[in-house]
Image (tube, rainbow, N blue to C red; front, side, top):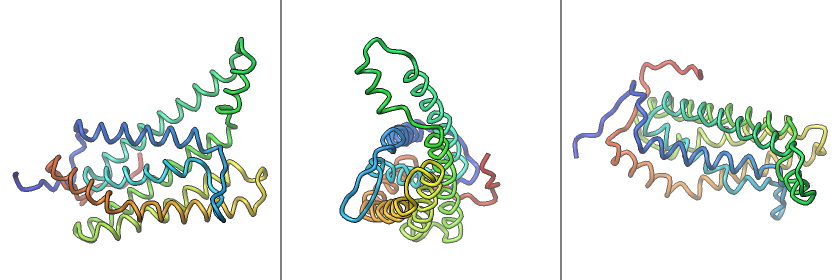
Length: 228
């Protein structure tokens, strides 16, 4: 195989990147549908989205590590728009009068999220994932590509807490008791970080395999880190 390319400017979306972006978007949409369900596991108070949402950050790490910040931001924006469209369509179809009261009630229970939940979800996702990609990209350049474990965790852990904090405060402040809000932020932040830590060996294998497959290892030297 040719020497692996190190590219700081390419924004070309390869077929493999498109596949990653689709997986990323699917995980995101599923997470934002299941986020309204609150569950308790031992002392931890979490939403049902916990089981899929941390994987969004793992895929984001993979995209930024292999393809760089700029292409990763394109995926973040594309899936932000997709998430907003899904929320609007679900709200519209749920509001339509149905001929079956049972189906109408079930759809209302599942999909009638408030605008606070929608805005909290969109804002938390965009800010959290942007911060994750930004830190990962800058640390990769600073570390000259070494110590992937350190930059993966250093980018994801603060992003998990910030993401959960933004969503929970926007969506549920004044609805949940403040004690439940604090417990949820701490529980999801801690557990999501542990989730990513436990899956790190698989993440590392995926990153190495993807770099070899794409013959690509992007370093974001001299780029603008504008989010837009």
